[in-house]
Length: 334
Ligand SMILES: O=P(O)(O)OC[C@H]1O[C@](O)(COP(=O)(O)O)[C@@H](O)[C@@H]1O
Ligand SMILES: [Mg+2]
Ligand SMILES: [Mg+2]
Image (cartoon, rainbow, N blue to C red; front, side, top):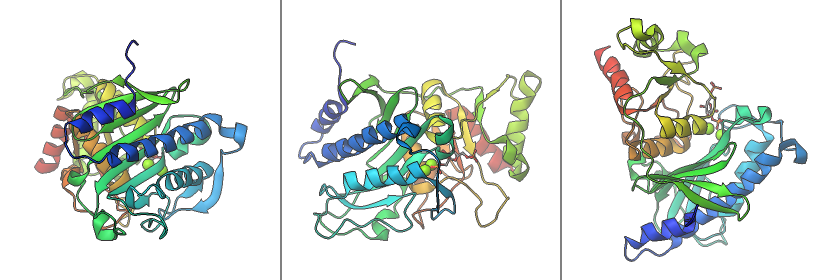
């Protein structure tokens, strides 16, 4: 690769299109990239440094935390809270909104993040990731909950880092989707995938089939039709994947198309969905739409949802345009 473009160079180039930008956004992205490089180090070393396994504690979601859920959360918080670029943070692993300590300056951005996505995979050495969503806030003032509870439509940036065979950052600032591969030799994220586009057609779906009996009729119908293959109304044979890691599923869909579903289910009326709006669904929806895909609950565009809680859960259906639109139609017909 002749001319290696680093993440910093790429963002500065993009920012040049907006006269008057202060550079604090570029600096914030570099802070996040530095934190994720550190996380990549920990994830890569695993039991060599004794970080695998359970932490025997529960998070606000009622999930037993992995040691790395806590370690990656601390890495993100300590990389971001002192920089003067943030007015507040929110994390999957912390109950309340995270305030910037009093003695640090307050900035004009908010970051909501899932420090370790796909955490059930970490002990079995499968792909995991970090997901982040950036919103603007009132500069120099401690953010409050209302500053956070804004539609995904208002995000200024969304991204995720995939810790897979290679470590990659996927990013959008509302001008398309680009991916960067971490060059471990120089410790830089290098632009390797420019302007990623999701194919509109697909014959590959991802869903946790073991939840089938809890799904609503539109999803039951769609999956039944996929399984009928060429003999069925969809007239083509489908393939199935389930990695149990949202970041890995979304990266696959960005690369070769597909549809991912964690739909509404009737198992527990208190918890009708699994994935979280602020730091899973919203950032992925921004990325998917910027790459030409569609992202919905089945009934509502994810980016139009007005959040009511930092840890709110939503049904999530995303991917190739024509396939997701079919499922939205099935919900309307139902
Ligand atoms: O274990 P299940 O039900 O298959 O769910 C897998 C899903 O849960 C998640 O692991 C939830 O994310 P966390 O690991 O951050 O809690 C997603 O990445 C993944 O898509
Ligand atoms: Mg997650
Ligand atoms: Mg997580």
